[in-house]
Image (cartoon, rainbow, N blue to C red; front, top):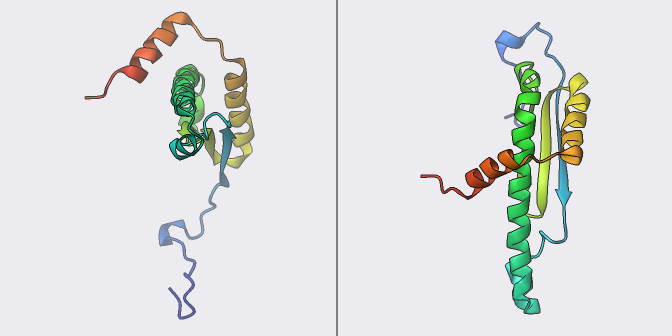
Length: 139
């Protein structure tokens, strides 16, 4: 910290003189009005059905994300070895897709993920395995 209260910028001495590759993080949030119904909102409007809709919606999102991750894992293995990473997670009102790594390849990674989300073909055997994983308690 400096006397002005602002943090001082610095680099590790091992990085001095070395070129740092340009990296970036990109996060996209996908939301739905079905997922944003809160128990408080449902109580105020006296719609217990709203709570059920939220629980079902979030469960469907969890299964969907697990299916997308199951599909993408073997297809993007080489990208993860090359220093790129991605996460697809649930959020309070839908799901988020985050990618990070070298910025010249992030567009291609994000495009492959979005294409997988859009064109996902669900196989029954994989669905059964994912459903069992989602509903099996972790001990």
